[in-house]
Image (cartoon, rainbow, N blue to C red; front, side):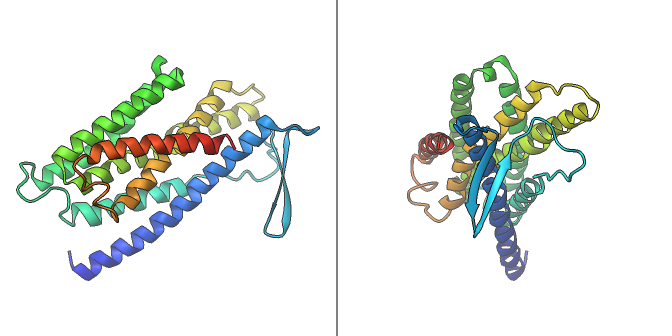
Length: 265
């Protein structure tokens, strides 16, 4: 690919990717914060949260069913745009940029690319099966297994791909899980709940619980994803280190602790 074209695409996709991610994750954390405020409200009406921002005062009211006479705003395209622009970056920077394997690697570049692409759906299948199984009903057990799988993936990839590509593909897998959570689990559950309400049926409470649980997962996964995005600027202390896989695992754990603290405040 022409170098000027490659750099232009890289810049454009990175710009879109970062801005879309800011919108998506910002909304996710805002709604997480709102849920927390509703759960801990001590006012006379715990169904309302008052806020002040940019010279205005806002009140948010939580309801168990929508008012079908009013427009219902959905939050979904930010997730899709973030994932699609991220995939575009993988193609431009790694697949077309020849960064998948180190010189002299036994794994050819086409096979490395095939492995990277295959990891995205495989990662979703493993994750979704885990958290849909009895093991996933115990949050501590599910989180422990998930962490072990992330570390194992990082270890294997850093021994097969170039270390930089290995890091990015761990991030790509996590980003795919986040986007799939929105489009495969959260949005369909919301649509089913709305359909039940329209028909006068009581919405399935398990759908709301599952959607809320997957949204919670996204607030945890995004922190190591952002770290991986930044790691390309710090090769000595991240992917270029001898124990790069352990560093990724350790900082993932640190990120999860930080996410837990943020969710409590």
